[in-house]
Image 1 (cartoon, rainbow, N blue to C red):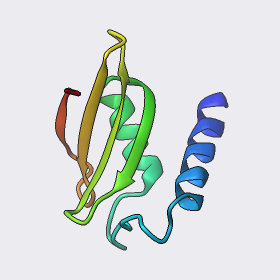
Image 2 (cartoon, helix red, strand yellow; image 1 turned 90 degrees about the vertical axis):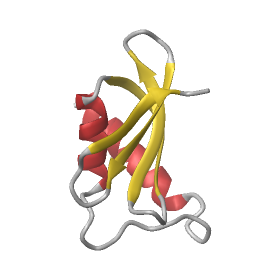
Image 3 (spheres, one colour; image 1 turned 120 degrees about the vertical axis):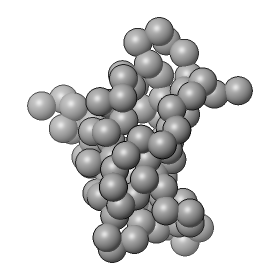
Length: 88
């Protein structure tokens, strides 16, 4: 239940902040909730950021089990994790 509340809060805050400047997901993209699920399945235990970009990806960053900061890129249409690397 707490995870669902966190997802709803994160999704809501992303929609409310910077709407005029933020890139928007395409109508044929996976939902932000699905993108968050894909990130968790890739090992993210804490997500700090996720946003749509103009190149067709959900991009974000967060912590994994080792406590280090990683960044990810998820294909907006397929949901495939295309990048999963330590943040520089």
